[in-house]
Length: 54
Image 1 (tube, rainbow, N blue to C red):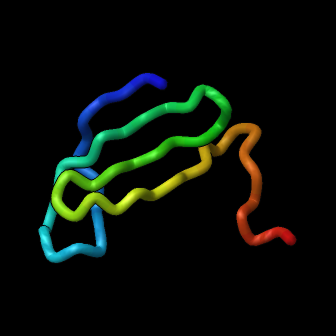
Image 2: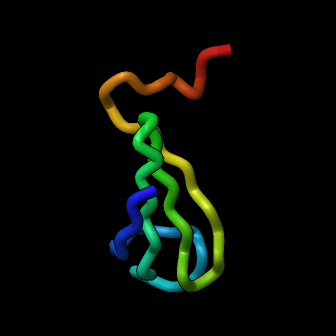
């Protein structure tokens, strides 16, 4: 996975925490908050799955 540091909003109490952004190369991104350690997965627009579909 390619990793980089980005500013990304988080629900933790820090206003604008730095996240480690990891690109899987398979259509999704993983963001890890440097403040609270919470992990968020986000699908890229092209070829991504709709997470609301069952």
